[in-house]
Length: 77
Image (cartoon, rainbow, N blue to C red; front, side, top):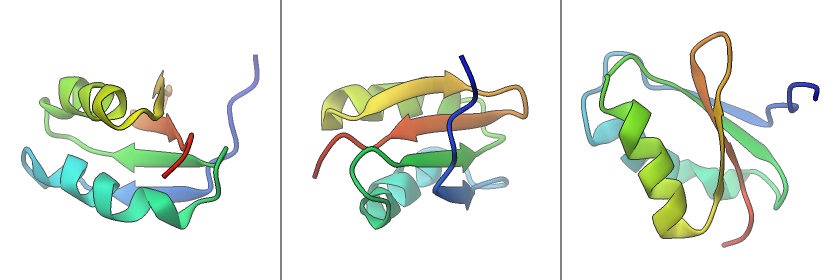
């Protein structure tokens, strides 16, 4: 499987929980349905917060890529 094309990258390095998820929540609608948002975060809580946010919001968590970005596919509103 190839890496997905990233439509929007959010640089949330240096932000502590829950700020990376709040930023994701504010900005994910900027990409079209089917688009991918990458969240670059160095807070260890992001590893659990971002997948949990995806489950609660009905978005697809694609995982963490080799560069340390968390990938989210927009499914809908």
